[in-house]
Length: 147
Image (cartoon, rainbow, N blue to C red; front, side, top):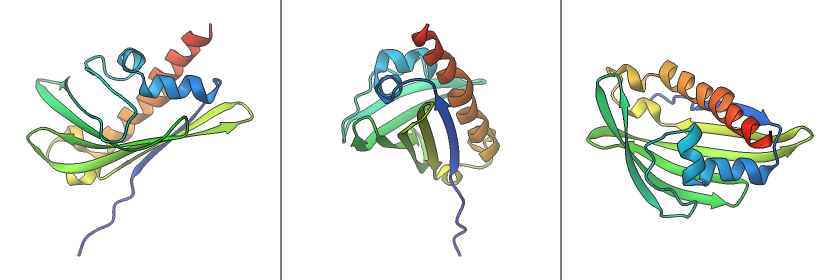
């Protein structure tokens, strides 16, 4: 019997237009400033693949992304895997207009498919990481763009 695990879902509303938030989550130079400084390249195009390494503790993790869906300024999704590590996950970013700016809903599904004996892949680590990226790092980045 397969246990269905709920995806990690993080929401944040930014006082910025959708076009500004979209660029922050899809432009390589901007992504390096708030997301992963080691991202080599990124294009919001279905089929685009990228690979870059992130160090956590004393270990390097090769991030492998494959863009699977793009609706300009509304939604982008990509498969998220790690080189040499079993497991498959997907990350979806969805943008919508609100009275106060732009709501971003991030959904990371499949994190439970990664080795659960590595704390980097725990649900708690994933929730904390996405919470940091959206509630702190991206929020601060967008506030700097507005000033």
